Image 1 (cartoon, rainbow, N blue to C red):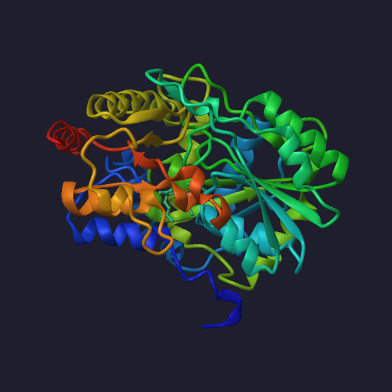
Image 2 (cartoon, rainbow, N blue to C red):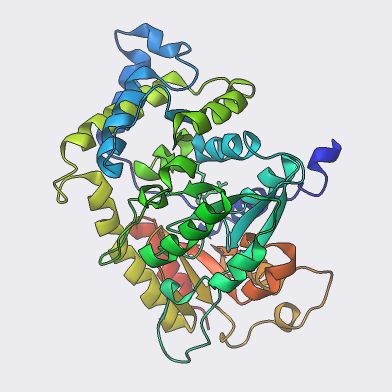
Length: 418
Ligand code: PMP
Ligand code: GLN
């Protein structure tokens, strides 16, 4: 293994997705919806490969298929309330992953420091390290335990003193994620304005991972840091068609930023994959063209009907967890819910007491639950740096973006728990 990858060989998705399959468990682990996507996107994909325009099976423009970047520009000019140039201010990539990779590797030099807020989507850390950068972690502050009370992801707060203290003369970038995976926290305008103020004062780049931007539960509102005064010129916003249209397996994402920043991301992209699959881009373009026309109609637009459907699933999930004795943290967005399992009775002492190796308790619990209860989740320590994993050891993450059958199967396992 090349030195650059040393220490980055473990991957939570490889490990826990494999485990879920091995035990044929009900899978609330890796995040993906198991209900069908809107029919018009799957039809558009079939048409893209089988239709009259056979050239849609060939390479398209490297930085993004023209039909797709044009409609992304139209939709997001509306969203950001400013003109976005389809050719110079958008970069289409293989999943949001590759947008993150291009943003990080296109800007980070060896020894640059990158601030990451914990809990964080796991790939940020290895991407920064691979670029030679140094991740600097700032953990959200969990609330004091509120026995018997509902917990909400908005109770996790960013301490601005902690954040300010993390900056050094080497800090180049901060990576944000709202709505947050795994916590489901939707950062408030005040929190983002405070972060923006520091970034402007210290001349810092922001990578804002907003892949769950449409999955917002009322009454919460998604605030885009790029829209705050003085932020457009320093922000790269990362998005995902997989989340937008419930097609995670399509692995298509894009970045939006001013042309000078997109240029640096383009250089990274053109030297790794050069371009993304044409039929997928065509189908996503068709989907966005359809939704663009009804963005003002919340009863019809998938951007709004999807979270309206998910909120019922969120509440179902919370209800079944509470009945089993877990304490859920109610998310304001996204499709994940954390739950504190530490008050469950009769857990094997091998989980609660073991000091074997340095495997966090939540990982041991998830492995035990997947094997014994046939219910797969993700340990939350996977979303923390090594030095802070203990902050997460009582929490596991459930994905509730699931069809009724999967949720019923989950309820049965939880009902029969004792
Ligand atoms: N960021 C976050 C916060 C995510 O949850 C995901 C989901 N994997 C991604 C980025 C990557 O998205 P994609 O599947 O489009 O690469
Ligand atoms: N975003 C999804 C999750 O958090 C999937 C991650 C992945 O497949 N790498 O579960």
